[in-house]
Image 1 (cartoon, one colour):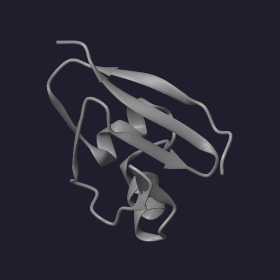
Image 2 (image 1 turned 60 degrees about the vertical axis):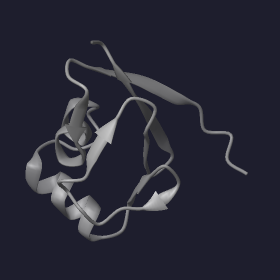
Image 3 (image 1 turned 120 degrees about the vertical axis):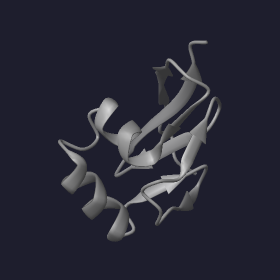
Length: 76
């Protein structure tokens, strides 16, 4: 079991796409790096490997890259 604590990532709308969230959370420098992380199976959404950069994330979803975890929080 991982002892990774998640940090909140506030978003303005009800939804954000995975690639955008990775950049906003500074888990990826740009869209190219986000795409590579996803294609290489290094990104988990809600505990499962996600292969779609356009995956829609909503409040309460979690993203994990390496040992960093982010939880999406809607600011709306």
